[in-house]
Length: 279
Image (tube, rainbow, N blue to C red; front, side, top):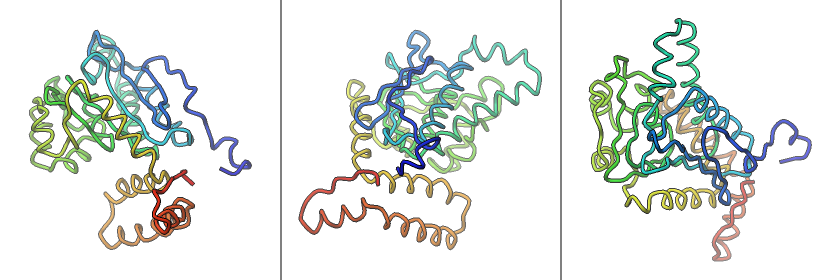
C-alpha cells in the first residue's frame, strides 16, 4: 500500500490479543479458536462483540490473507451461553433486545464484508450461533461425528436469525433449509456433506490441520482476486443475470490491472509456478 494511504487504512492483525477467544497467525493465516471447551465453546455478549470487531479490522489487515475458525476440545460452538446470554435476554426491554440482535447480525455482516476467505473447521456440536458462524464462512470442513443445528425454534424463537433465512437456502436449497429452520434438528456430518453444507468431511484428528492447509493454499493465491470473488459472490445475490455479467466484467478488468495477473502470465510463459504477492 502507498505510504500516504497507510495511516488509517492499514492495520497489523498478527499482534492482536483478543480476550474472549484465541487468535494466532500462522504465516498468512489467522486462526480463531473458540476456547471454552468445558461448555462446548458458547458465545457471550463480549465474544460476539469482539469477534465482530476482529472481522471488521481484517478489512484493513494485509498481513492476514485467510482466516480459520475452529473450536477447542472436540466441539465447534454450542451457540449463545444459556446462563450468560439467554437468561439475561429474558429480562431485557425491547430496545435492548433489538440492540443485541443487531449486534449478532453485525458479526455476520463483518464476516461477509472482510476480504479474506474464511474456513470453518466444524467438529462435535455446532449449534445456534455456532451454526450461523459456520454458515457465514466461505468454506466449511466437518467431521462425521459433527452435529449442526439451527435450533432457534427449539427455544421458542424464529429460524430467521442472523441472516439464516437468506443465506442457508442459497447453500443447501430452500426445502432443506426450511426443514432445518423449522425443526431445529441436528444435521449429521454425512448429511451436511451430501446437502452441500460441508465442502469436505475429514477425520477428527486431521480437521484443524486440514482447515489450516486449505487456508494456506488460498493464502498463496491471488489475494486481490480472492477478495473480489468473495465480494461478487455476496453482491450478486441481489442482481439479475445481465447485471451480474456486467459487474463481473468490471471486476475482472480491475483484477487484470494487478501485478499478480502479470506475475501469473510471466510464470506461465517461463513454465514456472506463479508466486502471488497480493498486489
